[in-house]
Image (tube, rainbow, N blue to C red; front, side):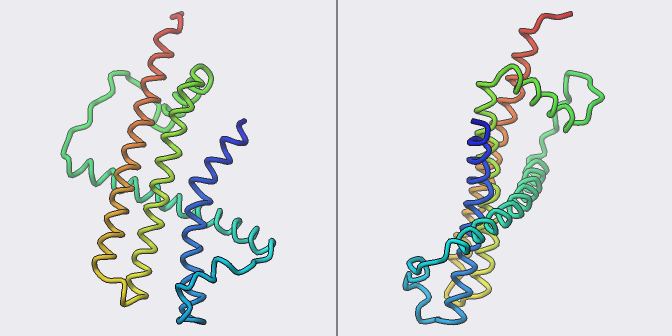
Length: 199
């Protein structure tokens, strides 16, 4: 069951965005350079391809998706910082004194939730998958939008703004999923700790 879970994560977060990205790049490069008059005739998707090339393409897509996921998370982090700066809302100090850095504290919270609240953990993982998928898709569309705009004169300003609009929409949706995951993690952790017998 765990293998299926991680397989679904890899499929959505890495493989699908990687396939989408590499397909667009290869499709454009092949027919734009060799057969410009056949660029959108659809034969690129109907030609038979050897199984080895399919496996190689999926492997490269996974690697490309993994790199895009890292870039997407950095982009999401920058957007979150920008939104927090523009909102000018002071951060609330934690009521619980702790010497642990935030990353260590969150790791402890995940450990407790994994061990004692497996049902809630599934929802937290779902929000994290959707967050990462949205961020990866956002950076993918951003790169392709800029690439199309530079390469093709027919890709006008409206198309550029549409692509940027989709990127912004995906990033804000990714922020929403991130806030849901964080809220579920925090609430579940506090509920688990509250029902545990005190020493």
